[in-house]
Image (tube, rainbow, N blue to C red; front, side, top):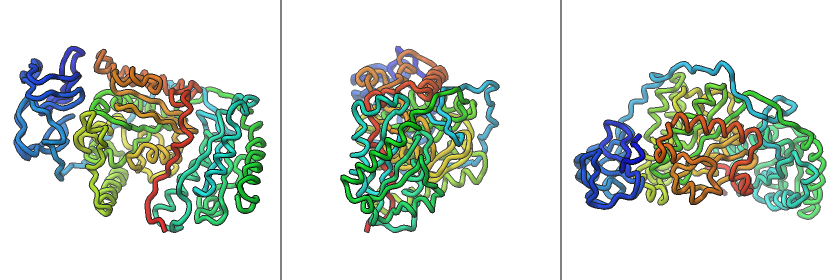
Length: 507
């Protein structure tokens, strides 16, 4: 990492580009690299430090991030105008980098909520789960009736959350898309952060409540109730009945207390969104250091966003505990290649305009930075979208890169806390799970301080070691898991971010 006074950051000795720490005017000498800038270089963007011939690989993080489309001279801006994607071979070397995990002798603890069946929660909500878009309004009307001071008599209840979506009908009851929705709805129904759940259907939809419960082994009872609008007499009567059902759940939901539980009960979702070039330099590796600490304390860290580890998957397969785990990940990469091609797309379409404005040029560059969230421990398993996560350690879940969709799957899998890195400034919450925001750069942190929890830009500006920042993140995770509100929670964000992954035909 560069000193705070340096103009640029070199990430690996083999790199042929460096990253601008500040805006650099054309004609500026970069003494540490012995070059002069030919172009004006914006903060976070790349500068060539030696000649890169046409077709030659552009190297950052010691890895290929693309290929020169034309000759690039030292001191020139390297970005989308002169760098392109090409296929190249990657050595997956399954398991060659796997190392035994050194667990902490005295595991850390947090103040959790222990449910009757032993599951551990970080928050205490009641959920209103819609099986179909047609029951979404009724679900929201019920939840809205408990706003204001309605929950004042129940101080231990964090809120009533409507889990609404645009799916559930005009689809096949077989195939990937329906299985994904089953996994997702079932995962939320049994999530420990819900003390009670009311599942609401319209009555004639494809996603029948009976189908959901039978295929995913859900059992109705006092804490998992069901209601069908058509059988309840329509909107008004259903809302009245739903309010009564929730009121019946409130006394039990309020009758909880927090107690010390080991950090091994934490399942941490790792997400990055609104990324910039600093994401892979500051916040993502710092979050990776925090994930390593959590794993050493017996917890679980969940990496996802399969299109955003494309080009970096070989770094994960090396850490797989077995060839079978590595093959699971490789299979998902191939599925995504075929999926993109079938829709006349390509995975390099992933960097959004904001990502590019922040200095990211290709999906390979974005992925190498995104994969850093996974830290350095072994990859112990790979899960389908929304599948229940049972392993301890670093795991991977196959999710899209789109933040709400990705995190909906991880929460359905059992994540009870989220760490979300952002460089451009994402405003995201995810009820019933707290979301912690990690800013990649100091300028954005100060500009959006009401949304950001931790400034990881200090790793560059104040030369704070990545390991120290990771320890700070881990300690904050324990505080939030114990009940401290994150910025997104204080802002009331999280009622609209339930977005299951839509795969398959709509009839």
